[in-house]
Each structure stands twice: as C-alpha cells, then as structure tokens.
Length: 150
Image (cartoon, rainbow, N blue to C red; front, side, top):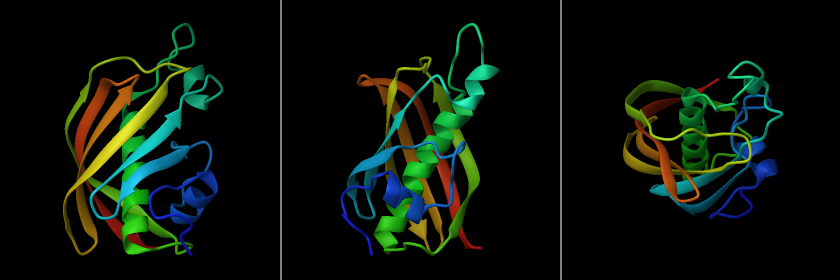
C-alpha cells in the first residue's frame, strides 16, 4: 500500500525502488503529481564514498550521480503513478541527452531534483530533469528509461 500519493519518505522509497546505500541517492520525494512530475531531495553530505576520490581537497558531487538522482526521483514517480510497491522492478537507462552541468555541487548542499514526464509507452518513459541548489540551476538532462521485471 502506498502511504501518501503526493510524497515519499526514505522508508517508502526503499519499498518503491531497489537502490540501497551507497547508491540510494535521494532522501525524499515531494510534490508528486501522478503521471506528470515530482521533486526529489538529496542532502549532500561529506561522508558519501565518492568524495574520498572526487576530489579529496575540493569534494564535488560527480555529474553522473546528479543525473542518477534525477533518475531515482523519476523511478519513484513511475512507481507511485503505477501504484507499484514491494515488487522489485528494475529501471534501466536507455539514453541520456543534452546533459549540462552549470554549477558545482558540494557537501552541505541540498539538491532539489525536478523531473517531468515527457512521454511514456508501456514500460518506456522519457523525462526531463533539472537539479537546483538554493533555487539555482546546477544541472539538467533529458533521459529515457525502461522498466524491467527482475
């Protein structure tokens, strides 16, 4: 059973997508509009394992992980839209297009990941995503993903 149609906390996220630490990259999802949009929230903290090597003297969140955070937000949106909980579907990237990284994301930042459904056909979904820190655009991308029953 889905607890609240308009949001998902960490416990519910774990029931909706298979990702786990250290690759669970969203802390909550808010403002879910079924079949249309959602906003994920990622609290960026220094204890995340990628910061040990990217880069030790100036830790920066890798751009690919920002896009992955967008994709996990999109996966929550799809799961809530289809009312799929405790099922174990996997979602695979099919394409990432027009990715742009505009500002650095560092420990202490709070990422707001806005995703919009552009199109869906059966198990394939196309999204646009924007990532913001303090209402400033830090990254954007269009991506397509496919849901697969494991």
